[in-house]
Image (cartoon, rainbow, N blue to C red; front, side, top):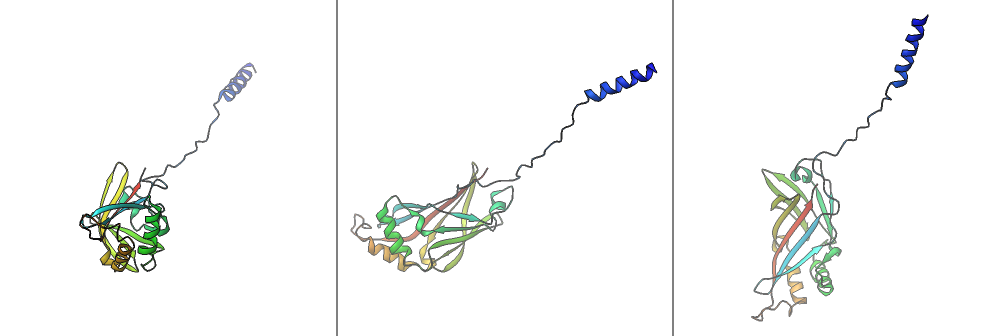
Length: 199
């Protein structure tokens, strides 16, 4: 009887000292590269005068959609689409902004929004861009450094049938686009640079 009491006491002691088991909660971390929200930027440089003086601007609103999961920027951006409201144009000069919206974009067809998509193949980046109701696929230079993916390209507006818009803005800014030679000129080339940050 004494042995039974000792055994019961020992069992009670072991049960009371048993550690409480905790259920582990596993939180799955996102895998691959993630785009940092609101990090997308689009800058541009247009040119005036025969000396080809640059005029810089940007768009304050860019929507990037249809991105994928992946371990590289190319995988994340494959098939991604972008849309840019022309109303978000900004050059730090309200008078210039107004003229560009009215006398350049206002002359183009269906340019309330500028849109396009990205595709990658054979290590190259292709941007399909629609402007003035003309859609073209352009091979664009691209880099990825310090978590920043960047594309650069020089558009020729003639390829998009937009020379009427170039002439229109040159007429509206005739004196402002004169160089030392007295010739007023607006170039049809526009350099563009787009970027997005990853984490």
